[in-house]
Amino acid sequence: MTWRVVTFAGFAVIVSLICAWAAITARRPNSVPLGQAVARLTRTKGGRVTVFMVWAWLGLHLFARGSGAFK
Amino acid sequence: VDTLRPTNLNRRRSPLAGCVLIGALVYSWIAAYFRPFTLAMNVSVALPVVAVLVGVGLSWRGTRAHTDPTHERSRRIAGAVWIGLVTLLVTWELVAYVSSPRHDHPTLSTIADDIMSIHPGRALMFALWLTLGWALFLRQLRPPEGPR
Image 1 (cartoon, rainbow over the protein chains, first blue to last red):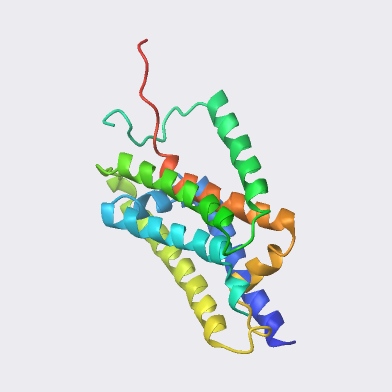
Image 2 (tube, rainbow over the protein chains, first blue to last red; image 1 turned 90 degrees about the vertical axis):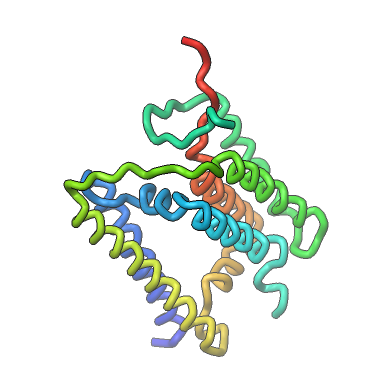
């Protein structure tokens, strides 16, 4: 097993856990579903600005600049 | 501006929402034709950013989330699990980022590059980015209610 496979497997496991937790919390009325968790993030002005900057940077990084542009 | 306020209740699908969705998909497909470091791609990214910035400005007054004190403990646990999962993802990404060579330790950006090496992949990623912006900032806004 190579490190590449280990890294991919790690991401796959974490994303699977996130999806599983999202499904579990969506069925529980006394829990915090994904939508509410995100709403909590953007509830305050500081949180909203921070999340906005991260989102804008993501678009710039992936599309306008391209993360592979410096290879 | 005062009539724009967040809500999660009684949301109905409107024809306008369908048009916006189709428009966003078409926009993503067209934007995927452009290359990084070009004016066209810069504009393609800047337009949604400005649109979301306007949305952030409209919702600037802030909102108060409804909290139910009877389930406070279980909600705290659920929130802590969310924080733990995000921390785990960020940690794994950082471990991959500081490791080398990149081929053996791909980051999320590298994985995204592989997906975006073909046009449908680029369009899909662009559409996901637009969707994320809508879900984070514009979904909570609703237009003024008309007279009944």
